[in-house]
Length: 484
Image 1 (cartoon, rainbow, N blue to C red):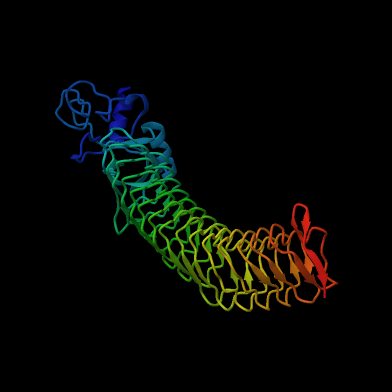
Image 2: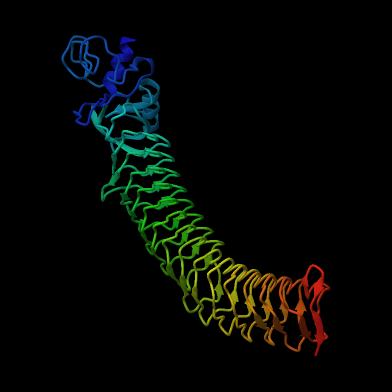
């Protein structure tokens, strides 16, 4: 036991601080049963009042009455991995410093350093991520914190601020989750951070701003979710994807500037950001995924560049958008389903397709101009636009798909000569629709295209293809069909 304690003290030493002011002392590696469970000391006490377990001396290094600080040599023939295994086997796998326990990850002799990962606090009032040098084979080795481990500081109620060391490359999953009193997270300009893990800062409700280092290339799902006090944040210049839920329910966030590096915005990334009123969509952005801005009720206007290739279903669901401009050069219009406050939309002359459910349930949309080169009006494209009182379908349109104008408020419709097919329920539940005019040509009709309308008579070409229920207007009523 004495030999083991001597070996432990000789190789790696450490100190544990109980307050905000910490004296610099050599590091100690935890050594199994020889280490005290008392968080007031880094080593087992053998008597005396020293915080380092002195046996009759006044030194803070745990001496047994003599000078035993000379490191015991590790054979120089050992490679780095062998030294690491020696340390882990004989000295334990953890270092304790400034009230935090770290796990040893790597030893490198050429560069004289140890790599460690923060794993848990040992005291409630810790406030510093730092480790002092250790001595191996007579050489001082820096100790670098490479990672803050998963859930290492979650729910630490006493933590109000933290400075992340330059050496940290990864903040693990849930590392600071629910640190409900933390107001600031600080990084230096030399930060090497590359990854912020899933939920790393989620529910840090008093965190009001954060300056993410430009070195960060990955922000995982929900990293800042439910940080309800977060009012400003920068997006790193190397970040390509803002993953799912990253800023969901950040209800104080007012604006976002996307750097040119960002290519995609994930599922529900900004959903519930009810004060978000300004975003810039760069020309390098390629995809906004489903429900990305769901519930962003303060977002009122937007210009969508023609370089944006994908707008997911319900991307702006229940947002505050009242007007949207689609930039010239875009051929397919999509992505404004459930924008219930939308009143104005400007479609470019380049539009060829109004995609499925593009404006479905835009219940405040009262008018829209369909450009004269549009060929397809998609399934449910204007479904439930119940303030849409009139529509001019241009001569370019060949296909009107199923439920395209279901439950709008149209009173009359003229189908142009270019139309070749009209899908089922295309004009169903337009309660005020009394006249619908078809061209004298062959058209393929789906079922119930004028169900629940006021249409009494229709005139069609005798070569048209239709089913029995095509011109049914109610449960037991049909419009009178005439032929040219």
